[in-house]
Image (cartoon, rainbow, N blue to C red):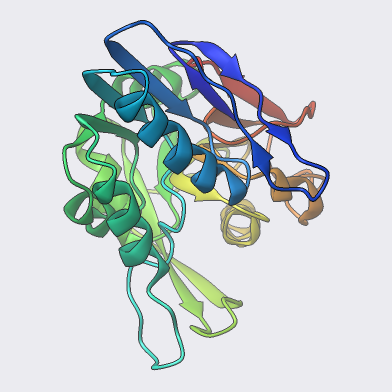
Length: 264
């Protein structure tokens, strides 16, 4: 989904399926807003940016890109793996945006590779949610891995624990999960916090383990929730009371998911 200064942009197509784009802008400062839905949008962003600068004579173009596509591929281990994040950021950098606004980058690698990047502050939103849900002394926040713990724990003044996943690198399959930290008393409530969710396997195994250890209610917050969560085991497992997410990439409707609105 793409918008220009809060106005939704609707692309058109030639009969052969190629893009037929029209764009007329008189403002000198433009926010090009991109909520990722598919890879074709990369081309639209590329074409529109050149048109805005070269034809419309826009002086300042800011890219508002809450979700960073390809962010998961922030490193490679085998020779057959393509470093897609590196090449994607090279494309974005080549468009010479005056600023690139992102939300909760998957890792510091994404931020390091993007020029003129601005990481928008989302911690107050998570802190408010934690304070709203976790009202008992024994309640905790839980991070599915140590990386998430380091990223979020300092901003949330609640007792916390984190998981250690045993994962097959090539398949992504979770082989097991252990929990470290936290004083877990029977009947404690939990808010699981992380940046991204696809099918929800990590959170399914986390919630299952927490329930085994005596958790009562469990909620999940993820900044970026993919539509694929509706196809996973988590959504109908009964383990999670509610999934909270921003409107960065989730476009479906579900009684199990509550959007924290941020605008396009």
